[in-house]
Length: 98
Image 1 (cartoon, rainbow, N blue to C red):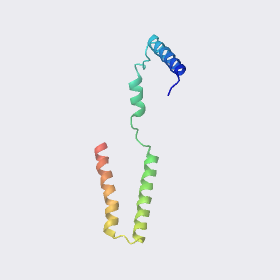
Image 2 (cartoon, helix red, strand yellow):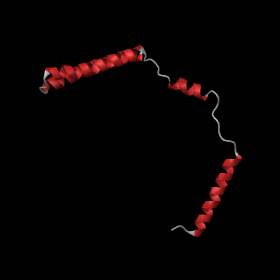
Image 3 (cartoon, one colour):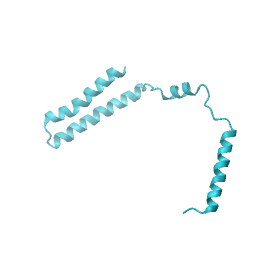
Image 4 (cartoon, one colour):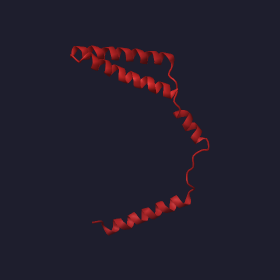
């Protein structure tokens, strides 16, 4: 249950906020805002060194995955599928994104 004095104070604050919002013009974004945001969010191409690092990481991670799966006794057909499916998806996406 709310106290009567508190309700009056809340109404006063509401009125004060409403009055201040109506007296000031609404904020507006600068005219170049959309272009600036689009330029910052545009995907950039990786540097050659970053691409090389990503490729090395992929090869090492794949080799380790194959080694661990082989040690665990996973059949080679499943290992080949576990490697081939992500590679096929990557190749398909690469062609689509260019």
